[in-house]
Image (cartoon, rainbow, N blue to C red; front, side, top):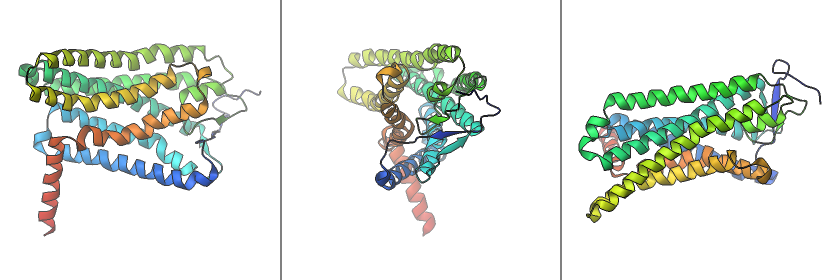
Length: 313
């Protein structure tokens, strides 16, 4: 194959989703509805937290950032995927592909760190309730968010710079619906051993270590809950932690299965389905799991509707 570097390589072609042409319309409507629900649901969370002073707490501070991340995360891949479902020539320019890969990695890492921060917040709230306001002060919350952004940006930039050094062959077809890093490495004619090493070593830092921190936090939470004789206290603790744990299981389960299972044992269709789970399904579920089932969020939503009704009269 003829080698082509980043300067002469103009575009990539997507194979897209493994869907029959007759089913394109149905799946387009489905994914469009899911994307719009994701955007509107998460923006509603941000609006409610912004307007209701009762929600100006560390828990909802992290939740508002998670909602913003989910909107951005979905917007990196889903609009392009929807547009490609109505075109035969599913292409993306080289610079556009690199940018999509960068922001995909960035928001993936940012979500990891936000989930970890939220787990720590729940740990302090349940295990050290008397010192909660002292520990989870505004300065610490801001620091956690700032560090999350810096680490996510650094990791995404590192992968992007390493990829920019590679040369690509004549085959520019990506067997995916977006510019996934592992799919791009398969198209390269260069030695990708350094890239793969960075994926696994840094992956341990940005995926496995946050997951371990989450599990340790919930281990302490579980031990504390078992010491509480009150059934009401146990139910309250479980209500604040169960939703977070369910999304953590879904999110990390698909990522670990996709990026840490050898590619020879996983088909490309399964890779695409797993990617859809955490790029489309998880951001869609977060508004319902985290907020719309939450009593405080429901109260804020009722207040918002009441104010709107009063203003309309």
